[in-house]
Amino acid sequence: MNDIVTTLARSYDETPYPGRAYAHTHPDYMAVLATLLGLNPPPVACCRVLEIGCASGANLMPMALSLPGASFVGIDISPRQIAEGQRTIDALGLTNIMLLVRDLQEVGDELGQFDYIIAHGVYSWAPAPVRDRLMALTKRCLAPNGIAYVSYNTYPGWRVLGAIRDLVLYTVRDVEAPEDRARLALALLDMLAESDSEHANAFNSFIAAYAKRFRSMLERLGPLSHAFLLHDTLEVVNEPVYFAQFAAHAAQHGLQYLSETEFPMVLPLGLKPETVDAIRSFSRSGIDLEQYMDFLRGRQFRQTLLCHDHLKIRRTLRPERLRGMAVAALMHPESQPVDLAGETPVVFRNLHDIAFTVTAPITKAALLYLAEASPQAVPFETLVVEAQHRAADAGAPLTDVEPSALARRLGGDLLRAFATATTLVSFHLHPPAVATHPGNYPKATALARLEAQTGVEVTNLYHDVLQLDPFDRFLLQLLDGNRDRAAIVREAVRAIAAGAVQFDSESSVSCSPADLEAAIEQRLCWFARVALLIA
Ligand SMILES: C[S@@+](CC[C@H](N)C(=O)[O-])C[C@H]1O[C@@H](n2cnc3c(N)ncnc32)[C@H](O)[C@@H]1O
Image (cartoon, rainbow, N blue to C red; front, side, top):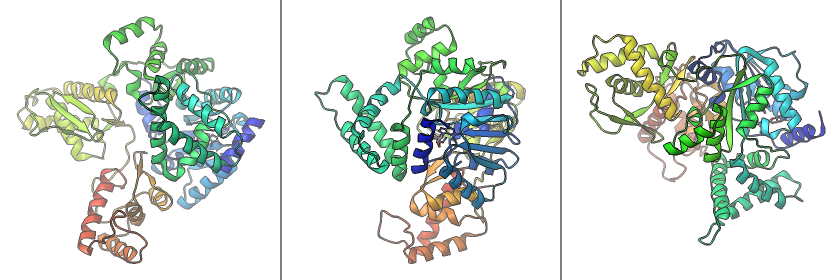
């Protein structure tokens, strides 16, 4: 290990990173994007996954639990984080995951090849020679059809964040203790966020707006905000790059840019047509075009997928590539009843209030079907048949239409939704077995129950992170599949009587057993809705 890597190892040992699941690093998500872009990625169920800089393995563990036929290796330079991760692996009894204390620069061929490689939060937090070794390692260890995920800070957005980092580093320059550095940094951010005034110049207003956004993100992290601040902002190395530089670096190593995981970001959405025409005229390649979009959007972070440079990417999305995938979506029509018989436009909205307008009866019927099936993902072929029946029953002239024609129309609309916002619809090659209702013996994963014991964040079966209040955390821990309603309510009553938990931490009034039973039922249904329960 060289000096800077030793310093980093010490820093992460001193203050472990607040690890968590990142939905877009899941092999199923990478495989779906690769398939949509015309590649033939390795099957997810039995894939081999490497995470470089895995910290305590919090991102890999939910994957290992949900893909028992796959195998996972995580490496990190920090012995303390790896030891913490190993304790969790032992507690969960996982046998398909291995965490190793290892400098990425020292990995040879001994680990073999991997179908999916993840490096989240490592690239721009490592010095240039280590970044180069990271690319070389990715190239060497990636299976021929494999996909790699690398996230990094980018310019131009980081020019402003860099100014904030410089200011904070300047202020804490003589402060040694990590806790004191974090506290001072937070106080400084508070000051910056409030520094805007009607007399402020444009730069000051800009910085204040950024500081405000940054502060609210830290507030969401709660007690983990200090660790996040110390590493993501104040760490000894933080070298953002332009996207075009990153893509060129990958190309030097025989890797090519596949896509951003936040797929709509690759499209010139939200820009005026004249602006799009102008940047197209400046652009000599798709990478150029995306770089210009980053300039215009002030992009500060990217999560990029790479593959070997010999693979042929087909960038036009085609409905036939949805064959064999499952689809999940939760959108509700703005008004009822929905005209399923004709082509009247209907606006559907998801929980993030993102609108999606649909005219085709097959798609309207499919979105209603998916909302009822949510959070389960429905095989695309099943969806076509069910939506055809539903729309035909409502009077749409679809009875004699070839399923392949309907699949093209529906698939085209679903891809349009995916290209609008990744939260509108999700596709899966290996969908999780989620329960749509709590059932008599509700069951959450062993990992979610463990997470609920130790923190406010839990990982659902789609590899998304949810924040729970104290009562939900308590309740989730009871859901091991062996307790029926009576047992769950009994334990809740006992815990509330003992003062171990309050039903509503905002209110001092405790509810009656009947109210509690109803409230528990409502929470269990919510757990099912947000994919925390196993089918
Ligand atoms: C910002 S943290 C990100 C952790 C995790 N990937 C996540 O996003 O939650 C960076 C991690 O990379 C590890 N790391 C830094 N340099 C490394 C190297 N040369 N080899 C292996 N791991 C390294 C650190 O110890 C740390 O755990």
